[in-house]
Image 1 (cartoon, rainbow over the protein chains, first blue to last red):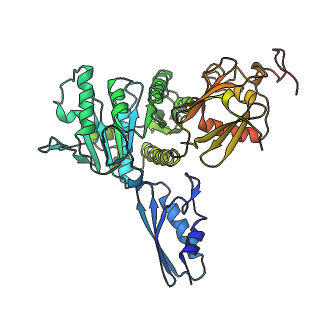
Image 2 (image 1 turned 180 degrees about the vertical axis):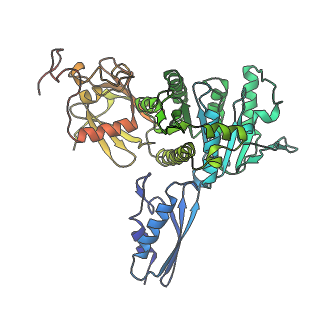
Image 3 (image 1 turned 180 degrees about the horizontal axis):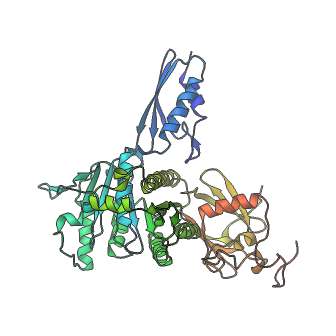
Length: 370
Length: 121
């Protein structure tokens, strides 16, 4: 007769490639039912956008199938993001959101908003519940890039309900000002607007909330890092030295406020000519990967210059949806996958790891190296 | 995101030990690690050529302070007053593999060059 112990033992050979632990130890296996030779169980992942979910399911299925006496195996895939949601703070904000990710760049014009829009759509496409907060107060562009048609709804409690575009809930400054009106605000007003976005928007349950930050290291960034429970930040740069210099500053800012930098992305990373097929490095390439290595943050990938990206942005349909077969779309998908991994690994490891430490070497006891 | 440290240890001979969240552990002799400082002073930022290697640092170099940088790196303040190197956890893991493969001196000069301060083992 089969028993649960045998099933779990068999499943212990299946390792999560990112967390480096087996799926039983990680608590992914739940509700094991055995009915004669029929076995079924839940495979509960940490995120619905898990890039290796199919691999894990197949591996789990064949591991159990190999047991003598098993005639059929049913694996139910699900994701439990709730148990990771522990946002502590003075007052709870964004409580239904599992991962809050800030997308930043040191310099303007590197395509941060394009990257944000595409990553949001790529995540949503992979089954995650995604929200996008366009915190670029001075130059909000997400309404256009995502082709948002509706205005947010406001209820009696002044709660804002964000409209949805391509499966992504979006809130943007552009929804609260005239198209051509310039936003001329002083610092405190900016901080207030950001606070409103954080506190008054009803996001509901989200796996990922991406925040499109304005360029630089100013008021909005500070307010956000101080008042939103950021899981991490993504830094977008172009390959030029000057952009990279600013990207470093952005990175240092997140360092100062202890927001983990999830990685760096290089936009406009070469141009693949549709005439000759050759890759031209218009703004050089590989700079972001070099800088991220020097600064010790993961390099998540580069996105080539491609007319489809710009067309997608202007038409309100990001390239991952409008031209899913293009090089840039594939690059965005790969980066979204890396981002999901980075976030999951970070969440899984931060429990036991040393954080915010300063160790005086002389005070450490000398030990014998085994 | 790479593994994170769960403990920093000091082994005899001024060897820096790091235990990681994934169960691995690393051990780096101080001078060896100082000679692999990734900062822009020690490595030319754009050519990637190392300017300060093991040969350029004192034989008895050791850490004064090891502190975390965000959640992705440590900064080591060495007793040769050099403190700008941010050793990313990923970089440290690479170094760990490199050291396990066989420690060798890197730098413009041989390990016991003319700069002094070096005692043969």
